[in-house]
Amino acid sequence: MDLKGAKEVLHIQAWLVRIDEINRELTWLTLARDLPAWEMSLQHLFGEAETTVGDVD
Image 1 (cartoon, rainbow, N blue to C red):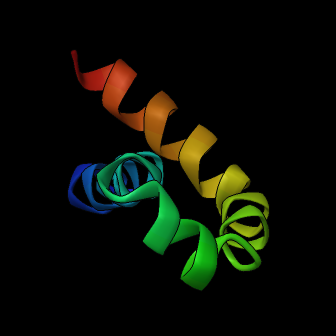
Image 2: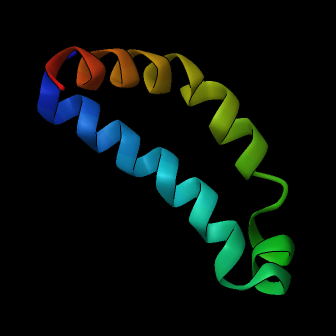
């Protein structure tokens, strides 16, 4: 994974965390069913992105 792609994936990971903090009621009603599946399906990319960015720092 290149550095640009890694940073984008980490942005997505941060978004998934923040979206739950923005408006809990709205988030729960509209996304609660989908967020766990999204996070699970992207876990391998999160790990790869963290490794890539960590290698550069």
